[in-house]
Length: 348
Image (tube, rainbow, N blue to C red; front, side):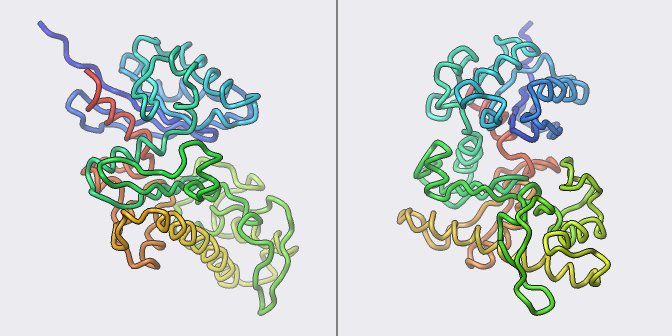
């Protein structure tokens, strides 16, 4: 009797979180989860995150498809060591015979091959997402806004069409922006802000982050955030407003909650504008892409991508809708979903 094909777990190993998407032998998503993994604090954080995933999913016997961005964290001397270090850690928990590493144009590599071809492995999770979307949509811009970064990836002719593939090239072309919906310090968005009719300089300290503004505006649910706030206090309105007030050298009780929400709206507009400008720059380099090509939103900050689509008068759809997936968290963790589904479609 022929054994049933194994389930596939797609892993997106980042510097702050691990996301895992699991599909069955029919290619149906059955689990999509995220656990906190502050990898910059040590490799033991990755070990703890892997153990947590196994407890939740009991997926040790799956076939495992891996992509990553965590090689960038500063516990590693360089990205090559980072790729090797992450794969070495995984090998303590997952058989290398059951592990395949996403390497973009090179396809799927063994962990040993991936360590030597690390340039094709490091920070290529965006390419998996865009390649999957391009199989379902003729053209468009995939915009994945996570906790920390924003990817803007044009696609047409059945594949991703980036101007650059490594982070240096992508930051240069603005296909990669270091701005996200949770962890970005507000001082990285602006050095001043209007309050009580006066443009006020802001403290150059990590007193508040973007999660504070989006929680105040009721576009992020506090219970969904796994990251610690700047001061370690919760994500409810009063605490968010207090953190923003510190940037102005002020306190929450010096103004009304509505005033702090208005200030949050100002910061929100700056971030939306920053991303919209980058979309225009990226799309200007792609004459093959029509001006009416849709924006496909992914990541926990995809509500920002939707705002950008409205500003640019482009159609919008979620990643999950585009790939016809119904799991609740499909759009939240697109790269993990993408490597799981691509592996299911392309591997024997």
